[in-house]
Length: 448
Ligand code: IPM
Ligand code: MG
Image (cartoon, rainbow, N blue to C red; front, side, top):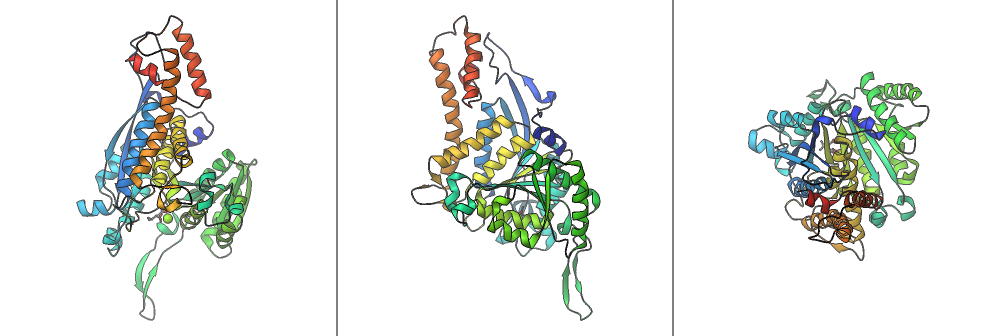
């Protein structure tokens, strides 16, 4: 199961899928591929949602399947409705069946929700309500939102090159508490008879403690710096936040903790973003600051996220919305969605090699000059969503063809492997691993 306990282990590089998920494949000859000797199977719930959701989900699904197959992983996908599409189909934004299927799966991949059509719906009939119910239902309280400026996209940043270059930060956002869920909330009238709307920012100690620990664990695996963002000069909920984060810090003497008010943090993020390593913050500040951080990287269309619970499957989604203005026009950037699939592999399933494969493929595609409109700069090739997806697949596949070439060099097509094949094979696998090529596809074919 994808969960934080698991994930924390994963940070320590000890995470492997449980034995029950490993099904040895048939071996029909004497050659055994050290890397792809077992097939692992995972059930993934796909929630494409609204707007550009289905377009980008199609691509992520194909990329996941291809990268998975190269690592001996098989996925069983089940597509379910959430958001506006669920409202139209069932009258509610999160059908019970969607939540129950999601809970039973190994991980959940979500596209985006929302659209003009449902904007003026009552709150309980808004697509966004479905997303919040999903996060609450899965108890995914820890939302990891990485924002790194890729060298390939530094010119797409709205900040000067010298400010943006090298930014690599992680926002750890509390996701199931605070003002998003606090009670009392609602509409009413004040003493003057005027209509009012009200919400409550509320945090209990256990909610702060558990997200603080995720923040510290995350920082520990990065550059060892954690900045806790709050509004403790004004809000009681933030005063408790600061007190608890400070208390938890004693468990992590190796992590350097600082505190910052959210208004200052918003300013510092565009003044000198490189000062940040890991930021831990509440639900609403995390929502706002992660959008701000995304623009430093060039485009919100590049940022993935992972939402994790203590026990249970994780939810993986791009941080951008459903972009109804460009939906169905083949203009969306699918890379945040594809990178969310990589996060699913890493944080949800512990499949680091397959995750890296996808991330490398995205970088390789950008290196080859392909850009969607949101990240286009001089001299780059403008492509649509679909073509970008095809290029990412091509990049994933190019690792495979390197492996096949190396193998064919030693075992020309049609010839049986020689007597010392096994020793040679292991040597080849070693070379391939050094070359960051993770599987022996030729041998897999031979194994039948
Ligand atoms: C996000 C989004 C959501 C949020 C909306 C769609 C409810 O902005 O994931 O950042 O506010 O959390
Ligand atoms: Mg947001």
